[in-house]
Image 1: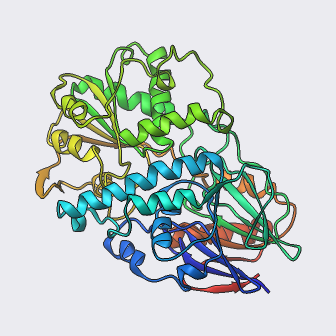
Image 2: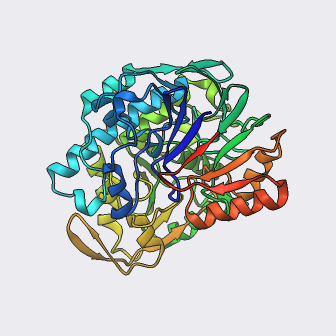
Image 3: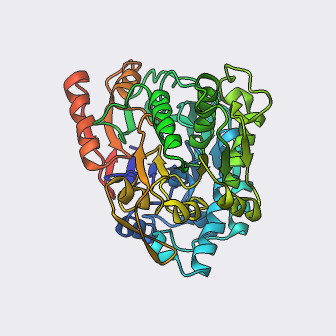
Length: 450
């Protein structure tokens, strides 16, 4: 009988790692870093339940760091097997893992590791290149074999290249959702149906909540008010997917609202700029944009993309209302920290968060009313207006998860992962009551029989 061990993203939102064991062979489904508070980040240093050299294959659902960020360490510590990912995910992995290696080195060199709650220096760029070389691009709807297990990717609609994966083990179907995306999005196609599943391992990030219905309207209202205040609008945004979606939304608003038509916009994230290119290189992995972009990225006018450090520094001298989109989305690192440092004390400025803020992150403290924050060792008063829009989440909410569950043709054993305990338990309760499936919130370190 096969076994499933929950190593990460069980009782937490990050650190996705699930170990499938069958006939003495081991397959890791996702291999991510824990992120958030110091206690959660410390989980990265706990050894895996098996030696890396004994892992036979890794199957990746998508390219977010909490699903791929541990891979180069696995390789550094002796893993030599194949890594499977969709073509767009493989390309994205190179971007995010190179960035992670550089960030680890930078933070430790400047002695900022403790303040940032970053992962230890687990790997370098050479380990990243080895990881990419071991990764086999595997298209959607194309069956493949991972350590003797038959598997197929299907579109999960979370970010570009994202997939959920179905394994067949002796006629038993086990589906891992990865991170499930949303329906009716501007850039990405809807999640594909589940079909048959005898075991379903599903994320539960928003298992107890429903997203607001009009993210674009909320953004328009917030930006118009911010422009009237006369200061900068700093938008911490994840470099992968969120930055692109925000640029697309700003482009739409520029076309319909004269108050926003001529506001300068700055994308200050080399990583986000590289991700922008993926949408051009993988046109089949996303929807076509539904309006004329006039050759500008995602149709955002008056846009300046800052790649070099000097270009980023030049933004500091911009006067009057302007919009800065910069990573990271939870303000845990990256160039956005410089912009927060420069504008957090300005009562004319607006700091707008457009994504999930993990407990312990700087974004979490700001969105929960912090009066002072610490950046680069300095304690700064918070005078800027702090806003948050949750409707841009790339995760399915409770209703959208149910819509996906409705496409399941069987009654699987259900395990909730990738959510805090309250959200995971709420999703389990829904599953039991509405679908009469057997359901359990996964606990880190536990093993179940498939």
